[in-house]
Length: 433
View 1 (cartoon, rainbow, N blue to C red):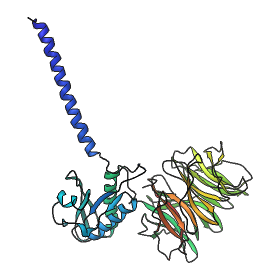
View 2 (tube, rainbow, N blue to C red; view 1 turned 90 degrees about the vertical axis):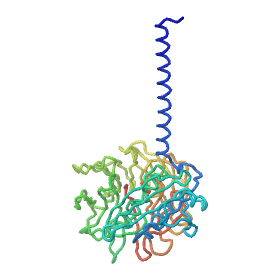
View 3 (cartoon, one colour; view 1 turned 135 degrees about the horizontal axis):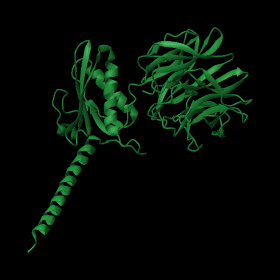
View 4 (spheres, rainbow, N blue to C red; view 1 turned 60 degrees about the vertical axis):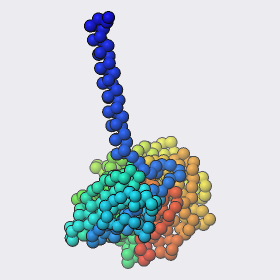
């Protein structure tokens, strides 16, 4: 017979094994539940993305159709969603969600909603997974009647985030320059070209707007009283101040990540050179001292590199250096004219303008000089800028006569004009949020 001590030890071992087994079961359940909540339905990093078939019903109530249509436009343009024709729907907007009604029409996800209120709106949106027959989220969105488009964009952002795991760009803004009565003014609009508004700043000419990293400030060049200065507009305080002015032409680059330092180009010393300017104490440092023309600086997302344009090789070409001006190397070798470089948000790509067959076109290239791609093939195209998620590019083009702002996917697909045909617009820059 086993002693009491041995039996006690064996009992303790069994208890430990049982506790460990229970722990494993609980941990597995936790992981399953957690993974269900964090499920990514569309892998947008895959080279071959399968579009998600989605049904977007008209919301019940006033402005319901308008809201549903805006959501449809938002999601369709990304290229990740296949929005099904509403004529196919079996289930009405008033009926409760039933997955069987959507399986037969090929939908894998469904959006339903209600709009309540007259002047102050409350929009309730529900998002469903057809295969799992469950509601993925239900959320209220509040705003004034005039903010219908922004409410719809907010819903689009939440759907996009839930499906892809990444933030949407549907509430972002675009700053750009447009001509009005022979004067160049600074404008802002939504990412889709709606809500165009001119900012009431002084000066007959404004060029090269750039957003701060938090989206609360705009940097731009402006000619006032015969002098070109660099100005900073603070949206939180609605104030504008001149942060740099010198003889010659002074043009803004973008911000360093700290938000207190910028790059700029200036001809104050007779030749165009690159400078860094610390806004808080006006400290100005010339980065490169050469006899060549060097312009259009763009700081990398991590602040370590600067891409710029120089004619040191005989023609305007794009170069890269570190932030202090060392380790300069040439990036572009195709064509005799390459300019206007801008980094992607991840720093993995650079978009720029190059001359090809006598026209200016938009190209992308890797920072190591590999992967050169031409994205446009109609008209003259200028001023490219990446979206904050790096999946879209805005630019200006004269392909339809009057210069306007266009948007396309980062691979060159789905190019379309977003500014009115009558508005001569150029120099767009995408806000970070």
